[in-house]
Structures are given as C-alpha cells and as structure tokens.
Amino acid sequence: MLAFVAPEGLHEGDVAMRILIVEDNPDLVSLLVEGLQRNGFEADAVSTAAEATRAVAATRYAALVLDIGLPDQDGLAWLKDLRATGNALPVLVLTARDGVSDRVAGLRAGADDYLVKPFALDEVVARLRALLRRSGTLLGQRLALGNLALDTEDRLVTVGGTVRPFSSREIAVLEILLRRCGHVAPKRLFEDHLFGLSDEVGSNAIEVYIHRLRRLLSDSGATVQVHTVRGVGYMLAETRAAA
Ligand code: CA
Image (cartoon, rainbow, N blue to C red; front, side, top):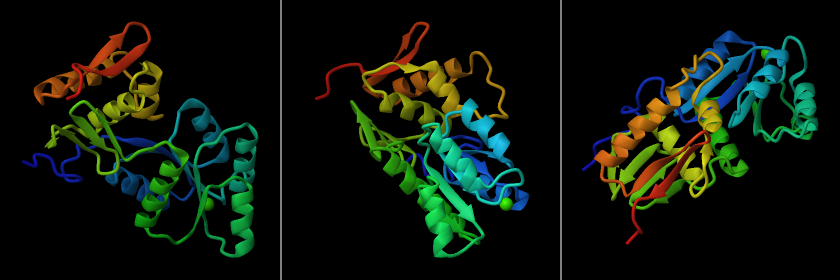
C-alpha cells in the first residue's frame, strides 16, 4: 500500500542535501533556489566570492553551483584558490561564456562540470545528482539496514517493503545515520546538513528530529533504532539480527 507519494508528499521547507549557489543575478538565484528545493535539495545562496569563502568555511555543503562572472572576483580564480586549500567540494560552474577555451579553463581551475547559460533547471539538477554520486556524497542510491530501506534519489523510506510517510527532514536525518551505519554520527554533522546560514539552530533542534525519527521508526515496525551516544551524537543499529 503506497502511503507516500513524492514529490507532492514532501513537506514544505524540508531538506536533503545542502547546495551553495554562488551567483549575483537575483532572478537566476530565485530560479535555482526554488528549483533545487522542489527537487529535494536545500539551497543557500550568496552573491560574491568573499561571501562564498565565508559560507564554505562555515557550512558543510554537498556541492556548489558557481557563476564565473562575480562582482568581486572571477569565479574561476576563486575556485582555483579554493582547490589550493585542498577543498574537494563538487563544483558545477555556470557561465554565459561559450567556447572550448572557457570550458577547458573551467575544468583546469577545478570545476567538476560545466553548464552554459541559458540552461534548463532539469539539467542543473541532473548534473548535480551525477556530481554527488561521482563524489561519493550520494554513494549508493539505496541504503538499507534491517527491514528499513531508503532510496536517496526518490527520497522514499520503506519498512518491510512498504513506503512510509517520513518527512524530508526526517529522511535527511535518517540518511546521515544510514551513511554512518556502525559508527557514531556526531551532532555537528546533523547541524551542517540540516540547517542553512539563515536558519536559527535551536539548541534542541537535532534532539527534536531524532525524537520524531525514533517514533516513526517504532510506529512503522522498523527493526532498527537510534542510540544516543552521550556528548557525541547518534548511532543507528538493528534491534535484532536480520532474518
Ligand atoms: Ca554573474
């Protein structure tokens, strides 16, 4: 029985992977932010290279969408500096410039992929998903433990093969736990993935999501549970050996 249908069933404002958009055209920024959110991403946006440097230092992003023509610095020069610090964040470069030489320059500066404006939003989403898979951020589309499974692309949770109505925030928490399966997921990891620059992170916000997730897991008969590792974070484990 299908109880949850994506994407209409996604709760408003809920998140999955956090993307930073570095772009100074406000129309393009709103288009990208809305489009990425509709596709299950969370998006932050900044309009200058200086802000991008601060954002990347403050938040752990899954990937970055980078405009080349920024007001304070050339996007490719900024990217070259970022790579020089050892930062391997997947980067999709957006540019109005066409031509092979720009493409080569972009890739040399450390871009993982390249899109020429104007572009279709679907293409941005598809390229980002491909980058995330390649980078290992979304390694494995289907994550499973016990009778619980998460499809990271469709953002669907099944328990014993039945789709369950988890919100996207709860799915984001679950995804972090599943990816760290067998290890403790530190609290900081949840904060980085779940909250953007503009969000106020209440001191108990993570606890609230963990509490909801525990209730959902228990109500849906999942054979996994979330353990608290005091002062460190959380760990997902099976409640009994899998059949
Ligand atoms: Ca620009």
